[in-house]
Image (tube, rainbow, N blue to C red; front, side, top):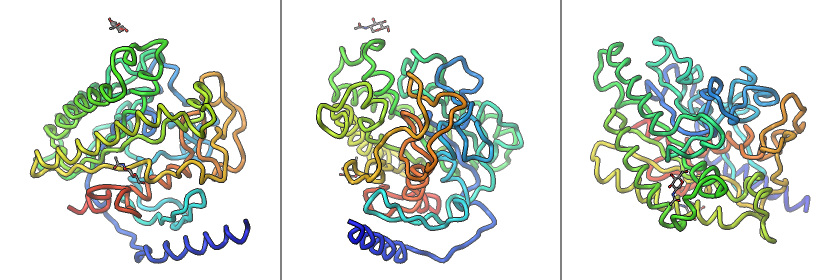
Amino acid sequence: MAHKFSRLVLVHLFIVLMHLEPFVVSEEPQVPCYFIFGDSLVDSGNNNQLVTASKVNYPPYGIDFSEKASGRFTNGRTSADLIGLETVGVVSMIISVSTSHSMITGEHLGFDEYIPSYAVATDEQINKGVNYASGSSGIRDETGSHLGERISLNMQLLHHDSIVSRLSNLQHDTTFTNKCIYLVNIGSNDYINNYFFSDYYNTSRIYDPTQYAVILIEQYSEQLMTLYNLGARKIVVFGLARIGCIPAEIGRFGTHGKLCVDPLNEAAKIFNNKLKSLVDELNNIYSDGRFTFINVTSISAPQGDIPFPNEPCCQVREDWQCTPNTDPCRFRDLSLFFDGFHPTEISNILLAARSYTRLFTTDASPWDIKHLSQL
Ligand SMILES: *[C@@H]1O[C@H](CO)[C@@H](O)[C@H](O)[C@H]1NC(C)=O
Ligand SMILES: *[C@@H]1O[C@H](CO)[C@@H](O)[C@H](O)[C@H]1NC(C)=O
């Protein structure tokens, strides 16, 4: 076993070295601005002021983050934070032992500060971008409503509309918004906190999984077109993770002898395939639009290969969020999940690295974020 493991690490190192590029510390970010839309996977504190069970501005969230319990749903930084930075900490190379792949984390977009959340962004800050993401939100407006207030994707787009107006008063360059990167990571809650929460929502009684994916993608399509019409040209669309392998979902549904909850993974797969097709279609419709799809299931470790159990790192309450002021696990870099739903920072580092610089063509297509930012 030990022998097999060290051979694997050697193979990893080899792949890493093959991908290693000269380490450049650039002064300017790759793009002038970076806007973030989505749910708790990328929320940086927009829910702190809302009346909702879905907010996490308390310890142990943020235990490994300089800004502590900022409202991020993890122990450190989100994937959107990490994609925005210049380098990811002192370690510029990480060998992921949790997958049979390797990756490097070198240069990313190169901003020297985190993109401010919409709730607190000032006029001086918005010209570098805004983070509109909101925990428990979805493509559909009603998604997450049993948890309380949230900012749905439709509402996030309205917020962006108002920011674009504010920007047009501040910026002389009318093509400014065309140059930014737009990251959108949403849809998980349309399943977890809607379709598969049938005590409260009736979508699963109206639609089968294929029909549901179709109506979600129709709505998402309109939302991405709205984003384009507000000036976005470089748009990164994240697919869904294996939502059936999330500890909270395994806890709720059981796996019936499997590793994960298969119906959830099946539904996510249908959605992801349609989302990938939508991205291709939007690239055909808009000759100057550059949409790209990030295949999160390609990047995250296949279940079964994982040498660690996928249990939450922190002590969780009944709702699978961390119990306030309790000590989380010590070796957080060996844990995939921080609470019952959300990845640890180490998982986010892996996702950020391979969506920025893809290792396989399936990770990001047609472009990874690095190439998208250079187009
Ligand atoms: C679904 O639920 C909503 C309220 O949550 C209700 O307005 C609607 O009539 C329901 N639809 C069906 C078909 O039951
Ligand atoms: C994501 O990547 C996996 C390979 O790891 C592939 O099987 C799957 O079809 C991809 N999904 C999409 C929507 O492209």
